[in-house]
Length: 336
Image (cartoon, rainbow, N blue to C red; front, side, top):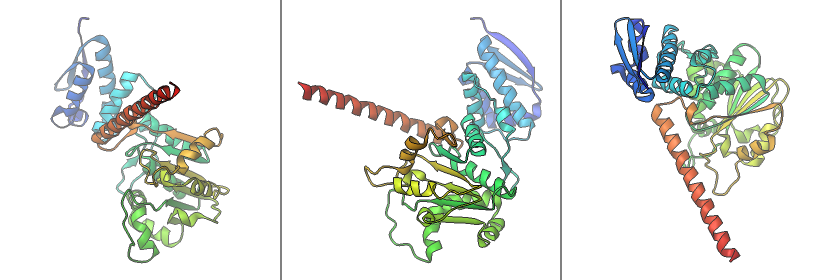
């Protein structure tokens, strides 16, 4: 197929942002789409097959518009724009960029960055209970926190309750010193981090002292009825079925609940059933409950995290296939 050449106007002041330091993003676009890009002043020339050039121009147009809106273009933006272009999926990055949930204390806009995150945010808006399930780095807890703080600031709820099971990640920490709050703080630190970034330390402490923001281990939820509150259960893969049922039956009138977890990172004893896994099977068809399953494509941390998650997914799939094959072979031998 004969190559085509398309030239477009490109404001030089956005070149560093759109194409990255040392043209790293430009090289990525060229390598991924098999095109050649030449930037001279205010003109960008794109050379390749008609389809490849169309994809490249579409990606560059979107990144340029994001830059014009004041966004700092990241490698994740470039990767996701390329992915959407190849899959020809909608909405585009520009449509995702419109949905600003809130701003951090430094003024940075918090918004969904992938199609999966957009569906997750929409489910939180429209459902009373939402399950956000997916690998590390997909923004499950952070977006849930942003939605909770926005609802709290808008007086849609009177308080925020954050909880998670107090289970160590594969290692025994022994007895921790201090009072009750000091003992549970290490388990709840990720929740504090998000609160500090979005709400600010001073506002967080004032609201916590008033009892309007509560951070507590899951065990302390028993016997309570939680009305007019935004409730977030984090690390739900580490709940037992009994704990999950207890939590879900705490929800009262005017409340919303978000349950987040990663089924590949369970810290429960070996062969224990995860309350999150069981609840997804039991409640998936309940109309008022939203279930959002995020994937490695929704990872918005360092690009290496996305590669790590993808590598583990492939490894687990291969191991599962091998296990099933060995099981089938053993069954055949037993029949003989």
